[in-house]
Image 1 (cartoon, rainbow, N blue to C red):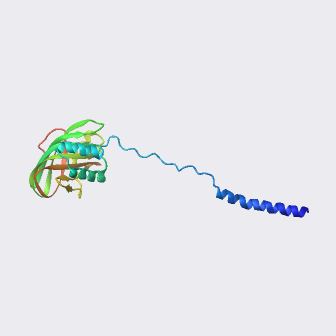
Image 2 (spheres, helix red, strand yellow; image 1 turned 30 degrees about the vertical axis):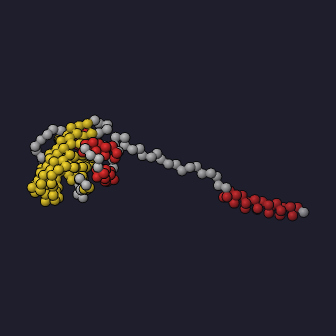
Image 3 (cartoon, helix red, strand yellow; image 1 turned 180 degrees about the horizontal axis):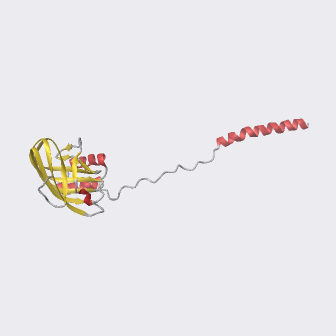
Length: 204
């Protein structure tokens, strides 16, 4: 009788040993929710596309889908600018050309700054034009950093409707002029723009 009880006890223990792991697997303990890091905050000093388009509409004097398309293209390529320039310029070329302009640099956290720009261009290019110009400025560490020479980025030209866009860079700062104006410029040209705190006739 004792042998039968021992066997029954061993069988019962074996059954418990086999079912407990199965129950543990069938009912796993609840897992804590995955940890997610904080989302990167948007730069409060950057201008949103609608702010840029609104300023452009007021400056150019018309409401244009073409301007919105150019701004959208610039934002998709270089992100949100932390400054922009509104101004006017004149240029002319016959193989070699010159460009002069003046305007105001606007920022959200460092105030506004009067700027002048000039620069040469060379290439298969002729004609002249006068244009209102908006320049989007990226990665500007301080307003004074605008005062340097910016060289053109190959392949950055973009045209839609009455607006044209190019891009220039220097020391990780990118300037994207968006122009709308009168006159005629044909061909391709290469060159740079030099920004200065005062007007000068020297393009170099």
